[in-house]
Amino acid sequence: MTLAAGAEVDVYTLHAEAGGTATDQALQADDFDQLADFIEAHSAGRPIILGGDTNLHTAGDHPDSSGAADGQIWQAFLARTGLVDTCTVAVGCTSPGSIDKVAVRNGGGITLEATSHAFPRARFKDAAGDDLSDHPPLVVEIAWRKA
Image (cartoon, rainbow, N blue to C red; front, side):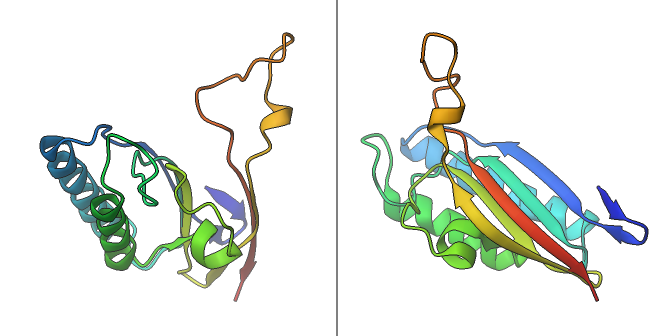
């Protein structure tokens, strides 16, 4: 995505494997390894914004998942790619267990900084007042600057 002349950022969106069985956990780990492989091959040294439904219950708050295993998958992915979770690190929010996540990485002379991280559920309802999705919306504002 072009932010301005000479300022580009690679944007990734995802919807990862769901489920909490041993097979699901192995597939999730493999999926995030494959995504890290792709990022290493195509975004080396470049700034990144990544967001989507990770299906990783990192707080162990779901009956069908292991928070410890999900957390390990997410932390290994972040460490390998150099991404920073905008909730738990950049903004310091108190809901690290959300499966919907946004992560950023600086690079190529571009600095990315999450300035807000929120789930504005009230703004995303239909005329009857029902949620538009089975997930609350995640909105992350990201400031950028070019070195």
